[in-house]
Length: 324
Image (cartoon, rainbow, N blue to C red; front, side, top):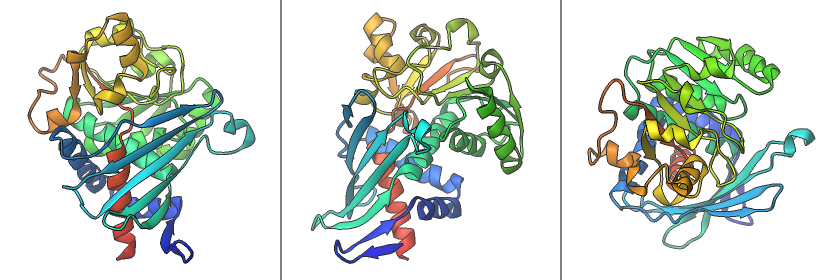
């Protein structure tokens, strides 16, 4: 952690953040992030809807947050960008920074690179939802899309569902899926199979992490007892599951205002497939204000858009551990 004298603030790199969270451990990290969902459903946070700027070739999101019950000393904002064309340039497709501030003085206390922050907190949020909503005897995990986010999803889900003994992966470019298998099979200590889309969806838990703009998972592929995590489609222009899938599922969301403008939920509301009252905040389930999975045959669907409180909690955890 390097101090920037001119700003009287610390610079925290992606690598330092990664080392800190790995040192803390996925189980502890997921447990900490769960507090944000609970406080969100209790109305104890100040988190406006993320501001999205779409340039046509990239996008930028600004995500401010303050969680006085979690920690009254800090507030912050993440600026994160997505630039799909960066792949061809050998650059990360997701870039960003987090600005952590002292609440009383509003002085900047830390600037954090936010690529790893986004990856970790997105994975942890899926872990929280999967633990709350999936069957406890799940054996197989299907991951659609093997880019940056895929291993974080796998680690988080395996943390909450250690019963999983096989991961089935599909990527539109098979070579990328094979690279994922080669790299992460030894690290995760689990059998990873490169399969067709249909076979990957034929899993107890299915997580999608793609940038698709057309749906590729349809109702006929969905069977009773499954848990689905829709992670990739976080804006109106993106979609992974056909909205008709939602007719078969109980729907859970990370944030109501954001989900109504993203992916499957936006299209489902527009087509009349989904009603706003069908959308159950995950925090309500964690607090016991709403029911999660009611039976073994339930199909549960979690829509993840990424909420600013996840970033703030991650930033505070990392900063305070490093200054110790």
